[in-house]
Length: 467
Image 1 (cartoon, rainbow, N blue to C red):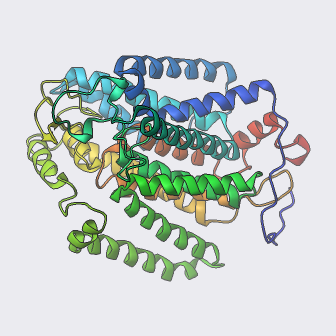
Image 2: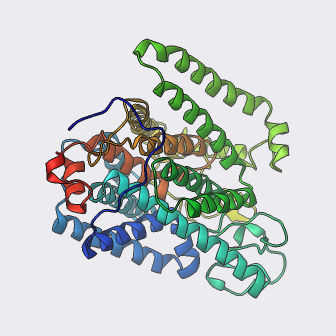
């Protein structure tokens, strides 16, 4: 393969691949799988917990069956070992769990999410994976806007999960699926039913669409419109966490782009120092000036009651500091151990609102250590995947280096989100950590390597002569 040292001024548009019906169906299935991870709470709100669980189990079994039929090229020695070690430790916790039923139920969710992450990462090339995530996010944004419009224009009052009748008397807005705020100007929740879930999804959408534009995707005008819609929904969600995540993404992106300009390893040292100063300084500033900063976005300085939750969770976690009380992600509000334990806005809390505190409660210091290794390995590989030499598409030697930005920017989102939410431990947060960590180990260069090239040949993205 010939590699040119001179980069084109702008990325040329993608050439369409020769896709068969089977390939289109596979991509459509992966989009559905990604949707269940990105907007899984929408299925719960729409159909209830049992139907949503059936959908999750059935889709997991189907993906497992497809995996055996397709037999995608996988280097089994290059699995995300620390993530799987965390799953193994969580599984072992059922032997000492204080809530064994909840542990069994939530372990099933963990297994299914991990399985789907490995499946999607193994059957799609890097370019297909980014396209599938973009398509999924378009569905999430479009359905969120359509849902909020339907509620405001047709129903014209707040909506309970499953379109159940509104209860009599005062109802805390936290229980609504939609608060009917689209026209009135308040915070909206989209199909996921939570502003703090919708905000990060909108930020992720902006990143993915921008990466698609930078990588030369066709139909560029619609992508710009999708970015505008994602920005509008993010503002209307009003999630303070998503704003903090956006700031972190800007810092990481700027540092990566500066790193790419260096020609010798020693030139990166000043950027690393500056990156560390900005990161640590930003966290210190956020803590010291939290009253003023959170007042700007209409939030309390105690992170909307989170500090009180952390105190109660840490007090219980300290009673079993090494192995924890048993895996439970998320907490099961119907379990006597959690029902009424911590109450917020009249509702039983389902998470510690900090992934590290949550892991400490469930799996102890050992669990925190394994999770830290999982994120350290993911962030380390994602960082160098982004800052090292550009990746080359083998069809015509054009760079697709923009695609390699996605894992490290996702890592920035999840690490900041994990300080105030436990969301990175389940659904799309956990799926993306496993999926990208697995994909980077399998195909550390976009378009290069046995796994990437085999799939590309099958999709028509790469001819055998180009190998």
